[in-house]
Amino acid sequence: MMRRWLLPGVLIAAGCATTPFERHLAAGRWDDAARVFRADSSLHDKPDALYRAAIVFASPDRESFDPATARELFARLAEKHPGSKYTKSALHYIELLDEIERVRIAGLVRERQLQQEIRQLQAEVDRLKSDIAVLEAQIAAQTRDAESMAALVGRLEESLRRCEEQLNDARVELNNLKAIDLRNPQRSGTGTVDSSANR
Image 1 (cartoon, rainbow, N blue to C red):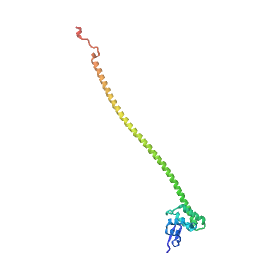
Image 2 (image 1 turned 90 degrees about the vertical axis):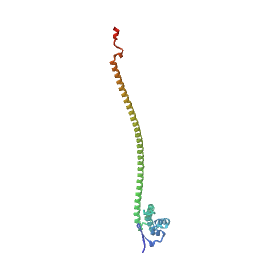
Image 3 (image 1 turned 90 degrees about the horizontal axis):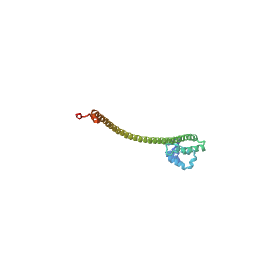
Image 4 (image 1 turned 45 degrees about the vertical axis):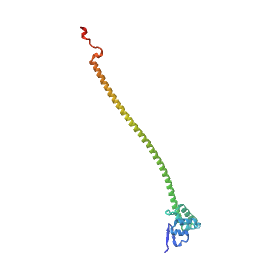
């Protein structure tokens, strides 16, 4: 029974694999098939080889994936062999690859935009952090100043309290002295006449 290997759009009969390129395809050795195709210029004008090689390069799940080369081969096939049975499929693949490329480019553009936005946002974050650090330092300094001022106010209030107490004490003492003077008029220098002087 003949073993058959299926590629997207290509059916390869293992029993018909007569060239190294076809043998690599039949064995699923995609990298080797791509290498042989690149090296063998005689395959570059054959519709079957062009189409099969293009499929190898167009398959994103293989290490041989090379969309630019795949598109080039599909385009060469459609241009040089317009009547080939592969032409319609090749044109379809070209449209698909073009769409993939548009999506890729759009993704790159969006990636650059996002990177720029990230840089701008990071710069804004860094600026805000710097501003916050400055404000926190100012607040800390003002807090220290406020604490120092509060301590100074406390000391001044204590001094004021002592001064007021001393003032009150002095006033009380003064009032006491005045009261003594009023009760003892002799201390004013105008005492009474001694009665013995009249005898």
